[in-house]
Length: 453
Image 1 (cartoon, rainbow, N blue to C red):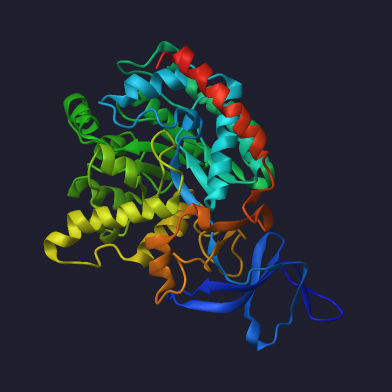
Image 2 (image 1 turned 180 degrees about the vertical axis):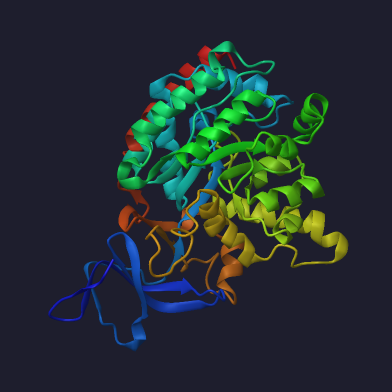
C-alpha cells in the first residue's frame, strides 16, 4: 500500500479530489484529497495545504461527500422477485409466501435475483452485505463476484418445522456436506470479496443437532454463523415450551454463541438475553422497517449500553427498498418514539450512532471491522460519494444530521469497492442494468405461477 514516489510528487492508483469528508467528530472537512493505492486508503490530505499527491486516475468530487460504503448486515438476495407481495398480508407470511416462493426457485432465478439485488444495493451506496441463507447459493456467489460487491453468503439451513416442504429440508449431515462444498468452491473467491458462512435459519426450523454441527463447522473453518434471533414471540414461546430456555440461552447451550455469530432482528430480547449476548461478543443486526412493521420495538439503547456491536439490515426486498438511509431514519424515529419521548430523552439514539451502525456496525457483523467502515489510512477503499449540492441537502448547519434526516440512496452518485469504480454518475459499471430489468418481470411471473402465491 506504499505510495509511489515519481519524478514530481507522490503517485497513487486513484486520487479522489475536492471531496468533503466527515471527521471522527462528525464535522465536515471540505476540499479533501483521498489517495487510494492497491485497493486501500493510503492518505488523506487537505487541498489547501499544497497537494503533493498525484494519481494515475484522478476523480473530481467537488460538491460531494465521501462516506464509507454502507454494509447491509442482513438481507435475502433470493427474495428480490417477491417485491410487493408481503405488504398488508396477515400472518403467517413466512409459511404463506416466503416458503412457497423460495421452494420454487430454480438456479437461474437465484442468479438473476442476486444480480437485481446487487444492482439495487450498489445504486443505494451499499458495498457489502450478509445474506441470511437461500437456495442455489452457488448462483448467488457467481452474481456477487460479477457485481464487484463484498458478501458473506450461507445456505438456507432447515431440517424440521411445520409448513416447511421436504424439498427445503436436509439432515444435519447433508447440510454440512453441501455447505462444505460451497465453502471449498467460493470462500475467498473474487479476490477475497466472497465469504461462505454457516447458516441457521431459526430455532423453530433447526434441530439441536443441526445447530450444534453448524456451529462446530463455523469454528472449524473459522468462518461466520448467521441466524435469525428473537425475531418474534412465537420463537421465544417455541424455545420455552420445547427446551425450557429462551432462544439465546438455548443457542448458548448448543455452543453457537460467540464473536463469529451474526444475529438478525433481536426484537424480543430480555435483560438476561442482552447480558448473555454481550458476554459472548455476539454481533447484533436490527432490521428497522421489518421489525417495526411486524414484530415491535427493539431495546436498542439498552443493547448499545451493554457494549454490543449493532449493525443495520434491510431484510430483503419483499416489502422494502434496499436503502440504508431509510432504515436509519425508521430506526431513529421508532426508538425515539418508544424509548426516548416517554422519558424526555431526544438523544436516545444519536445521528452519529446511526451512521456508525450503517457502516462500521455492519462491517463488524461481517467480521470485517478492522478493514471496512471508516475512512482512514490502511482501510479498504470501499467508498461512496453523495451529491450534497441539492435543495434537500444543501445548505445545512449540520451535514451529518441532514444526511440521516433527508438523504436517500438515490443521492449516491459514485461507488468504489476495493478502490475500483463500480458506479460512476449513477451508472453501474459491473452489471447490465437494462438486461437485468428486462428479464426480471418475466421471471417473477413464472415463479409466482409455480409457487401459486
